[in-house]
Every structure is written in C-alpha cells, then in structure tokens.
Amino acid sequence: MKYKLSLVLGMASTLAFAQQSGIGTVKVEPNPVRAGQEVKITIAAEGEAPAFCGMVVHFDDGSESRNVKIDGKEGKFPVSISKTYAKAGSYSIKAEGKRITTHFPCVGTATAKLVVEPGPAAAAAVPTCPQGYRMVGRMGKAGDFSCKGGKGAMAPAKPLGCAMGLEYFANDKARQVGCRKMKAPRK
Image (cartoon, rainbow, N blue to C red; front, side, top):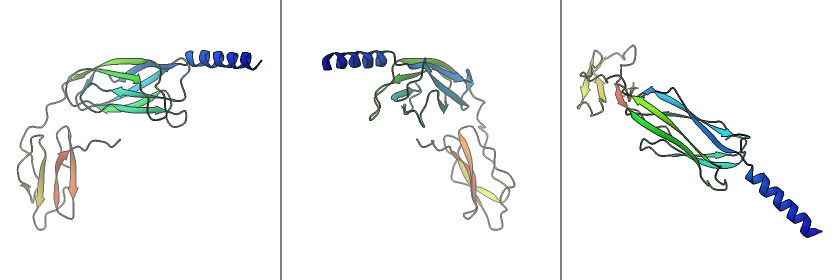
C-alpha cells in the first residue's frame, strides 16, 4: 500500500511540475525609441505564472544582465524593467531561466527586438557659464563641465541646459554649477 501511494504522489508531483508555466513574452515600449530615451521592458508568463523561480534578462548593449527572482510576493509576473540605451542600433532583449540562490530556473525563454534610433544631436557648442561664473578646467569628452562663481556671484535662477547623457549639478557652498555625466542607477 505504501508503495502504491508513494508512486501515485510521485507521478502527481511530476505531472504538476511538467505543467508548470514559465517565461512567455518580452514586450518593449516604446519601440522604436530614440537613444537616451527610457524604455519599459515587460516580461510576462505563459499560462499560469510560476510563483517561485529565477531568470536573467540580457539587454544586448554590453551592459550587465539583470537577475530576477520570482517569489510570489515582491517579485511577480509580469516583471517590468526600465532601461535606457545610449547608442542607436538594433538590440535583442532576452529573458531566460537561471538558477539564482534557492530559486530554480523559470521554464522557457523569450526575446524581443528593439530598434534604437539616433537621439537629438548633443549640444556640441561651447558650454555657457552663468553671469559671475567662469569655467573650471576644460570641457570633458562627453561635454561635461564645471563653473566656479566669483565673490558675490548669484546662483542661477534656473538649471543650466545640459546635453543628453549629462545632468545638472549645483554646490552652493563651493559656488559651483555645471553638467556632469549621469550616474548609473544602483541595482
């Protein structure tokens, strides 16, 4: 009797595992996109979404792939990831199962093609410091620069216009403003 019961339970668990759903589709919006514009990558499950598995998403632009744990609580299907592509081109975004710590691989793989068009031309002109400020050093290869205010210099009323891929910064204590390379988001 014990043997028959364990055989039935073993077959039932094998059948349940075999019917487990997995990675179904990868969707990218908007597509096409301009270089420097953020895209939303959505990975959906096929059939009933698995509640406990791991996967990796490859972005095809030389950046680090992202590991995703599906745990049924915080990590659930559909999975949404925001990403910015810096260069124009055609990219293949792929999601595939991967064992991550105690999470076994999600079943299946899915890919989507993304077309990145050239972005607007960067402001290649000479950077302009606000009145009462002077440029410190030289402009960097990416167009980044820094301006130092003299005595009595007034902080600019509005942020400087920075080229794509750069962000405005201000340090009131040091009387510095400028445009610097954007920092990569922490994972």
